[in-house]
Amino acid sequence: MSGEGLDMKRLIGFAGLAVAVGLSGCGVTRFMDRSAVVAEPSPCTAKRFEVYFADSEARLTEAARQAIGMAAAQLQGCDIRKVEVLGLADARGGATANLSLSERRAQAVAEALTAAGWPAPAFEVEAAGDEGAVTDAGVREPMRRRTEVLVDAVPR
Image (cartoon, rainbow, N blue to C red; front, side, top):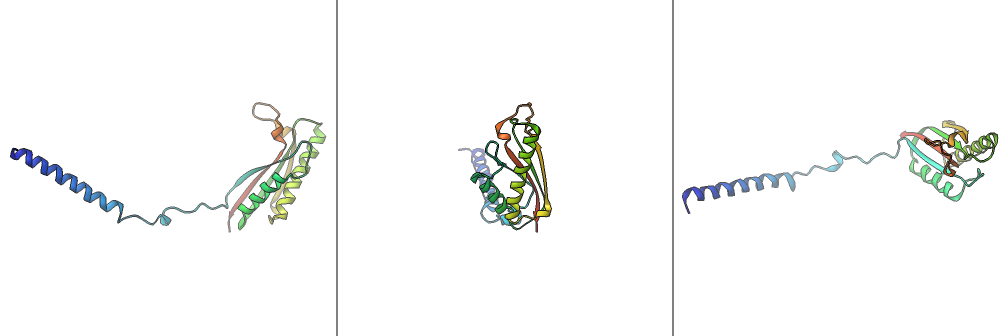
């Protein structure tokens, strides 16, 4: 083997060794503590959830009670500043009946959240009747038999 070929092998070997030594210092021995750069997200943020109702009903179903319970538990320990509750209905029935039904739905959800410990003064309860049940495409859907809840919460 010529001297030039031997020198090239040494140079490549030395470069590989230098890279390996350099990289070894980045991996095993120099990890930062993740807690210094990664924080657990706070559950105390703005939230939106929906509570669905049976056709022509304002009584909370078991699924509705579970949704309310989960939301209340998730925000336990937070400072709840504002809660907007909007009752909706589908297009069946007259405008007056749908508005009344929407009001009763919104009130049922607000009462359940207040019973779960949320501050009553923070609530804004509204009803949209079947007018709020129109989608972007103008289609009225049975899934509009619901109450939308928007919560403004921050850490204490």
